[in-house]
Length: 353
Image (tube, rainbow, N blue to C red; front, top):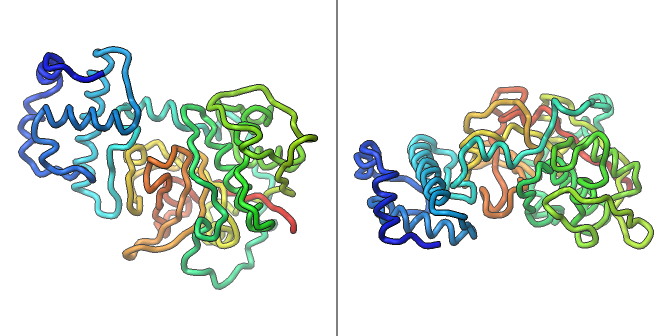
């Protein structure tokens, strides 16, 4: 639905405040857009329309569209202000740019640390990589062929399943040489009662389910629905990928996390509900975030850039978010829990040759 001339005039009166008008003369810093794009209401509307087209967005009514434009403009202002202040990373107009921060937090997470009877079965003495020495300066399991294409959980609280599957895909490739995309949907449908499908779960429980249930099916054989379905038993006629179990990385121990990462991709939990995380577009993220874990992701490597050490994190919000679906998160912060709590609850699957 395109804006009519009348709609543009209505938007002008409804959405521009004196404060915003006075700020238009400033130099903007929206990555990917020139200052001229943000100097008139017509160009702001054109920018919104272009963003809608790029992300396949449509709205049911002009009222909804006006509301989303207001949120878009507010996020645009936040991006501009943030990009003027921070130097190691930047924000941009990604697919979440028409959502309020509260809406974003409600729709795109799924780690339920408090709601589930979570337990850390493995002790630090069982951490198999504790004796690793002489860590390489950089590790990137994407370059080693152990990471599948970035996936998208959509508005289903299934991040825990995507984090689990990424780690299992990784260790399977390392051990067998075969990179196989596996089914998050099978975990969502079948991994009960500790995990709760689109209502959240934990990676340790999912590892236990895969190990005790005979493996996990291929993505093509059990495709993702973006909602809960009925558990389908397909073990006899279709192949599965198996693991032997899992281990927990010692809590709040970044060196141990790096040791594990030097050997395989690792499932980690973070607090991802900050507004800057929502609109992250690139760079080494060192923004403000707490350690109340709410999102499961996969660490797939580490490295350094311009004096900043980071961990490479594969998200499950599609390839349009961040750095083609990834975020580089600062490490060596001096906080044992790590940035956004990334060192608090890491674990990985085990698989014998």
